[in-house]
Every structure is written in structure tokens, then in C-alpha cells.
Amino acid sequence: MSEQNSQLDHQLDFYQQMRDSIRIWLKGKGVNYQFADYLLAAPDLFHLLCKLAIDKEVPVNEKAKLAGAIAYFVSPVDLIPEALTGPFGYIDDVAVAAFVLNGIINKTNPEVVRRHWAGDNDILDLIQQILQVADEMVGRGLWEKIRKGFDK
Image 1 (cartoon, rainbow, N blue to C red):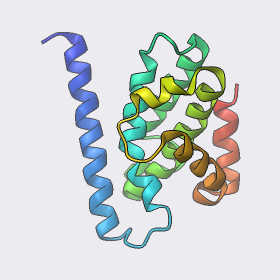
Image 2 (image 1 turned 90 degrees about the vertical axis):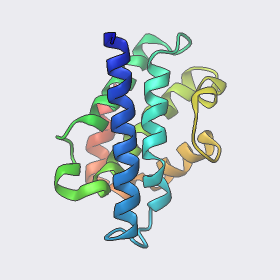
Image 3 (image 1 turned 30 degrees about the horizontal axis):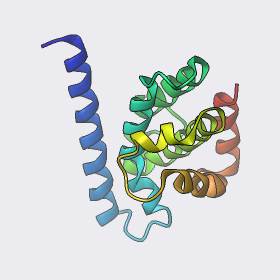
Image 4 (image 1 turned 90 degrees about the horizontal axis):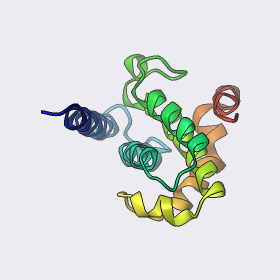
């Protein structure tokens, strides 16, 4: 198996594990969670970040931000760690993804982002909706710290 196939399998495993853990959490502890729809979009946002990272139409400086957002998703160490909070911990990852994707939309043709979107709903609307509630979703102090880390 080539290294590229191995990386793809790892990404698919992470994607499926994330999707499964979020669905289980939302049926249990997370039932009636206010931002469930955004949390459910996390696996598709992760997939989108990965696809855009290899798209030739995405500027190199934006790819660096994509790489940071992908690393933030898979890292066990972030401001709301999944290891401690369970799938709820992906909510900051969702906000980071929306922030980075918004930057790409502002610097390229939005159709580049739409072309790779595998989720439901319009991705451009979803990004704007997430950004509008990011302070409330993540917490104002945390969101400011996260945003500053990716706003370079």
C-alpha cells in the first residue's frame, strides 16, 4: 500500500470515528444540544478542509491555514479537547474550520469551496451561520484566542 493510500485510509478512519462519536453523543449526553447541527457538520467540514488543501486553485498561504485547521481537528490538544469533553470538543474545531474557509472564500472563487463540499445545505450559508454564533458556541474569550491564532 502506498503512503498516499495509507494517509487516505487514516483520514477516512478519523472521519468515520468523528461522525459516529458525534451521533452517539447527541443521542445521549448531548441530546437537545443547541448547536447540534453545526456539530454534525464537523466531519464534512474536516473532509472539505482536506480536499481544499490539495486543490490547485487555493493560494499557498491559505493552504497553510488549511493545514493548521486540519491539525487542530486531529490534535488531542486544543482549547476544548475531545479527550476530556467528548464529541462536544469538536465545536471549536467547527468554528476554526468556518473561519479558515471564510478566508478562502474571500480570496478565491467560492465555487472552489462548493465543488468539494460533501455535506447537506449550502456551505457558504453554513459558514456564515457558524461565524455568527461562534462567540456563543465556543465562548467569547476562547473564540478570540482561537481566531487570533488563525488570523495571520
